[in-house]
Length: 166
Image (cartoon, rainbow, N blue to C red):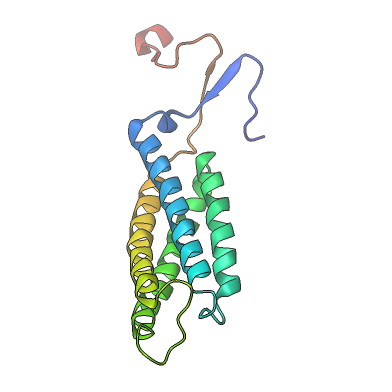
């Protein structure tokens, strides 16, 4: 059974101990939280103009927070899903940027935040999603799920000498 070891055996995850893995995990979590905050800002600031996307934005924010939780717990399986969804959000945001700037003209009702600010926030969302996709895929290549069993009293850095084993 996964996560359970025999008595006297300790399971280590050596790839989680590297600085690169820790930095990648922190970067993915930070980018997910930044993404959720930016989407919330656009959602709240453009509530009156977001006709069909309100529910999608709310679900996206909830999903981003859930993914951040799982990545923080070293769940490697969500990283490709995060990358794929980041590409989808990047496409949505990329298509929305010109629309927000077009609304910054006379004759349009102004949302709570000005359309220019919402356009700038949406452009920032595009950049964050590109970074998120790249960093999530980098994290997936780091094999956070690799497990190594060792005796309970043994030093984690200990490598047996092949001459001793033979």
